Structure formats: structure tokens, C-alpha cells
Length: 233
Image (cartoon, rainbow, N blue to C red; front, side, top):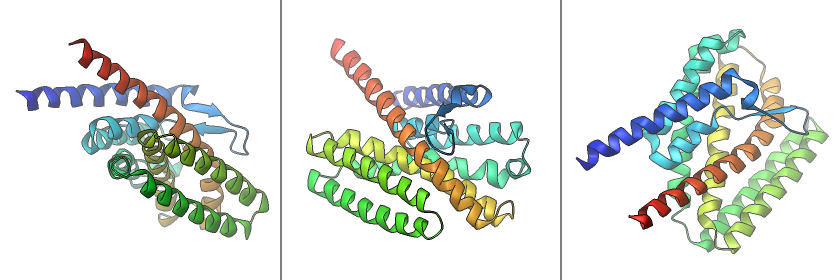
């Protein structure tokens, strides 16, 4: 009976989060203004991240698939009329977030700090690579990466490793969405690699930041509500 109730819970949450993703996609609510050349950060993929973190890879995969189907049905650009671009990559958003969160939340503070140091190194290499073609993009990558990793280290040192894991999981889910969609777009011949690279940096970074903030706020609040219900019983 417990498994059945759990299954019903997952179905309900998957349905609610899918509806939210569709609402965000069909209104301007899914676009957050940001002070970057991208102008807006999209958050339609965030429900898939939240679903993966809260309820596991199955729910995350379902919500991501619904998001992809909606994107495919609503598409006006040829690239997103291709199901291999619009649907397939979105399946893995919540799955990546789930795997990242499950792995990171079990790490102790020293291991989390080591992970942050590795991220810093990767960000430096990434910024250098971007700088070969665009100095302003490299500067943007460097500043935002340092700020993000600085916040991550602060959370770890404050004993908020779970919150740090949530933020990284949101980043992984967002990078999965951006990277796989653009990568598939390049493979299918819809855009040139250099164009995809610029879009990935200018859109991906603000979307990572916004997704991390929203995911942490939603999941932490949800867990506190559930904890309160448990104590009330």
C-alpha cells in the first residue's frame, strides 16, 4: 500500500510540475529579465529540475518530456520542430539534476570544497577558451563563475551542504538542457558550432543562476513544509 501511495504521489507531483512548465512556456512568466546580452533567462526547464530533486529521476524525466513535447508542439522555428532537438534532450534535465543532487548531498564538507575547487579550475579553462573569440564573454564567464563558486563555498563553510548540492543540481540540469539542445542543433545542421557556443554562454550562464535560486527556494521551502507536517503528526 505504501508503494501505491508513493506512486500516486509521484504521478500527482509530475502532473502539477508539468502543468507549471506548460504555464511558464505559454506565458511570459517563463522569461526572467537579466542584465546580459541575452536580455532574458528562460526557466521553463526548472520544474523538471525540481521534480528530479524532490521525487527522483522518473518524475524528473516525465516533467522534462512534457516540457519537450510542449516546446515541439508550439515550435515556430525549424530547429525546434525536430523532436530530436525539442524533446529528446529535455528528458535528461531532471535525471541529471537528480543524479547530481544524490551524489553531492552525501559528500562531507572537505569533499564539497574540493569539488568547488575543481569547478573553479574548469571555469578558468572555460573562460580562457571563450576569451579566444570574445573578451567580453570571457569577462562575463569569469565574474559570474567566481561569484557562483564564492556563494557555493560560503554555503559549505556555513554547514549548508544540502543547499549547495541543490544549487549545483540546478546548474547541472540547466547545463544539460542548454548543452544537449544546442549540441543536437549543431549535429542536425540547424546552427554553426560557433553560434551555438555564443548562445550557450550568453543564455546558459544567466539561466544557471536563476535556476539555482528558484530551485533552492522551492525545494528548501517544500522540505520545511513536509518536515512541519511530519512533526504535527
